Length: 437
Image (tube, rainbow, N blue to C red; front, side):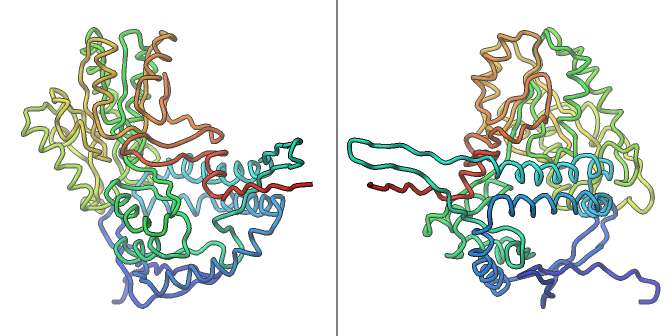
């Protein structure tokens, strides 16, 4: 049609080449609800081609020295940094997040990760022991399992989970799987990979608690907890969705927290004043809204956000997938809003009496990814952190990451850890060699 803007057509990337596909899926701009690009709807053939390319590239890439591979990773980081604005625009448009967040967190952290592991691979050591009475020496070597960046080393195949996803994870020549996503999908991956005894690293959902004691510094705690609840529209696996506040400060905290939440502006991603953008899809928006409806049906109170405050958006974004940050109270621990991962801008605030009580309640969900503890009592901070069933515990802060240390969850929040040593262990196979002299 004359005057219609051409849609962006994505292609698969296999063996160093961009390849078209015979079938495509519409991808929607979350801020407008309009189709903005088409994504390959790949199948088994595309996966087979990608696995073949990776298998053929593996010997050459894996035999390169750590110094050579480090240089390649640093070059990738440089290229990302040089095109930071272009990547930030693409990430914001695809996911609905604010352009500010993509510019200041997503892309810079990608650059940081490449540079961190480019340095990390230069500093790993192997183990060595001797058995003099038997005249033997033992040592270990690490053999790479995955592949890296020249043609065939990195392959990108788009498609749906039931087709591309299942073909990939069940392929006998894919030795390990690193997955970030939902628990049901992880269960299916586990089933499909089990016959091949594949190595798995699964980073799944969370129902992350914030525990706020009466001696917390609320001037620091409240803005940080608003951010931990609603950053990226609550679509971060580490976001806070259960806030436990000690009774003596509950009323003050709730008042100030709601006031601070109402100041978070929901707007189009390009708005530099917007704190939140759009949710990822229409289906997900409806799912998140359904939790608020269920909370109301259970007798909960909505203090701000969905159904309470008015959402003001430009005309073109009226069909976008926007939702106001929502605060719920008067809700039972057994409610779905307190036990299931919502993955949206919804958080529940409940009171507690004692330290022992709140630890038990915080642990009383199937997830165990992350938690935050707010207190000026150093002894309490260490005590509570130790007892919480969470892979990560932040105290008096949120989302400060140290890539040298393990990252991952307990219980239904996943299997395995990421980080300098943990990633090295996962993406290599260790071999013990014994030499008799």
